[in-house]
Length: 143
Image (cartoon, rainbow, N blue to C red):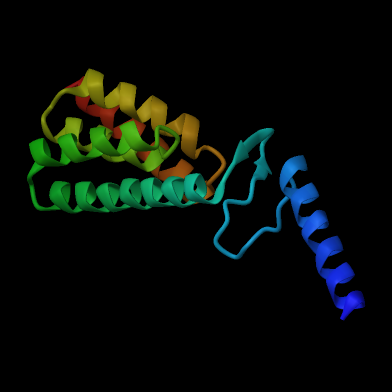
């Protein structure tokens, strides 16, 4: 019995020491800090960022569909919102350029095409689409 009391006392002292020093055991649901690109980001921030990227991609898809259905004003609104969420998604700029081509605002179309080129140049499929779109804009400007 004395051994058990001594063990219990040592265990309690050890737990108090751990709590005083700020050490704790991580549980499955605790927010573990990860280092990404030199920035610390906890799990809840990672989840939020993934949700924002998913929302941006959803808006991109919806914007493209609206353009395909000749609803360019609505598409422009959605694509601008997608850019606010994820400014590095070049597809948003590409589809905005397409929308401005439809509205015959070729200078705006050219600006958004230039932005899409910056973000999509490393993807050969998209880079080719961007070049074709640029030629179309230049041709329409000169008519």
